[in-house]
Picture 1: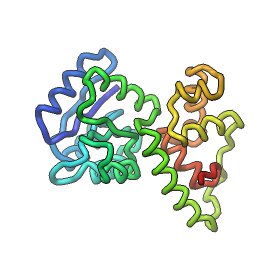
Picture 2: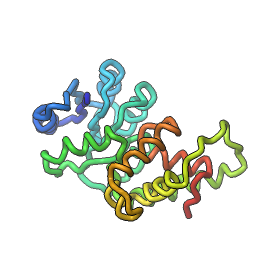
Picture 3: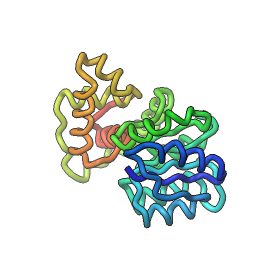
Length: 218
């Protein structure tokens, strides 16, 4: 998979590049030191995953995330942050980021995080997931009078069960345990959900389901 690294600190970029380049299935295709450069490189290089610093010059990580999702919607974006309490992080997730990594994460954990996001997982803890879903549910209620623009794809009962648990911030292992099925089966259900909804990530699927009133979240 092709990865773009975006951070205004050269040492952090170098550390991430070393950690990722050591993996046979990961190629670092570019590095950017500010948000504007990130958008330009993403448009040209079409990365599968971008590691994006939240706070940067010229364009912030949030603005760059919006720009990349507009020009290369298939790129999955992981925010790099010093704290999971940053207000900016919530805005970044709403802008299209798939999750976040704390900058003090062990470097050997980064490749698996990139792989997980590439496979459609979200790097979002349950507390943030709950906050996001609460806000999107509120938005959905405000749009209650708006009829769906297109017929909503039908999910199976099992796929809806999986989607409800994803909305609670559960990962594949937790969902498998809850439903007494294997992790591979959960992955297959998530993949089918994303294919049917024509979306790229679990969080996008939850947001879509709330907006189209497939899920009711209180």
